[in-house]
Image (cartoon, rainbow, N blue to C red; front, side, top):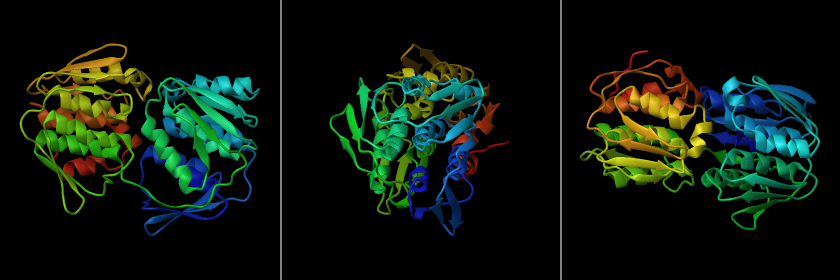
Length: 395
C-alpha cells in the first residue's frame, strides 16, 4: 500500500497507521519518501505524491528482502539511478533473476557484499521468472510494468510457490486501478502506460505475526486474537487449519475474534511449505512436542530467507532439546513431550527468535536467545504482547 500510493498522482489515505513500526516497514516508508510526502494524522497515513523525482537516490534497505525486491524494478521503470545499501546477508540472497534481466536489457546491475547499483530505464518485454525462487520478483515486476510505455508479460516457469503473496499484490494493484490480465496460472499480462490512482486503503492485520500467538494458545492454554480477517487471502491464515489438524481447539466468536485452546498433546502432520514458508519456524515449535514425526516438505526455499532456515532451525531448536533432521527440501521433527530449554541463538532471524520464545511454553527450563533483537525486523511489540498473555521475559 505504501508503494502503490506513492506512485499515484493524487493524495492517498492508508489506515490504520501508527508512528512506531517494524524495521522492514520503516525501511519501505523511508524509501517511498523519495516519491511522496508522508504525514501521520490521527490514526491514518496521508500520502502526497511528489510532482518530480530526484534522478539519483540512495536507499538503505538494511535487511529487508521484500523492500529491495519490490523497489528494484520500480526504480528502474522510473529511470532513476539508485544505490541500495544493505546487509551482507541480504545482498548474498538470490538476485540472479533481476541480474539476468538487467543484463539482457543493457542496464547496470552491479552488486557487491554491501551495496547494489542500478541505472538505466527498464523496457517492456516478456519476463521469464522461475516460480520456485521467490514471489517477490514477480510482485516487484507487477508494480513496475504498468509504468512502462507498452504491454509486458510475466511468464512463470514451473509451479508458482508463495502464490498468496502474488494475489495480495494483485489486490493492491486493483485498488489503485491498475489493469492486469492473468491468462493462466503461468502467464500474466501487464498493460503499459497506466497511471496509479489514489487509494483509500485499510490495512489488514498480519496473519504471519498472529501465528505465533495462536501457537502459544495451542501449547500453553488459551489465546484470543482480535482484528483478523477470516476471509483474508493471506497464505499464513493456514495456521488455523494446521492447528486444527494437529488437535488444537479453534473457536470463532460472535465478536469476530478467534480463540485457540490447548486440548491434549498435539499430533504430528505432513505439511506442504510451498505457499507458507514463513510459518516454518512456528510450525517447528509446534512439532517439537507433538506426538509423532512431523514432515515439512517443499521447504527448499527456506535456505534463502533471513537465515538458512532449514539448517538454522535445526541448530536453534536442537540446542533446546528438539529432535530435528533435515534434507535439501525437507525438515523432519520427532516430537518429545517437553523441550529441555537452555541457551540458543536465532541466527539473527526474527521468525526463529519469536518461535523460540513461544517454545518456552513447552520447555522445562527457561530459554535464553542470544540475539533476540532480530525480532524488531518484523515486530516492534512482540515482547510486550507475549508478556500480556503470561510470558515471563527478561531483556
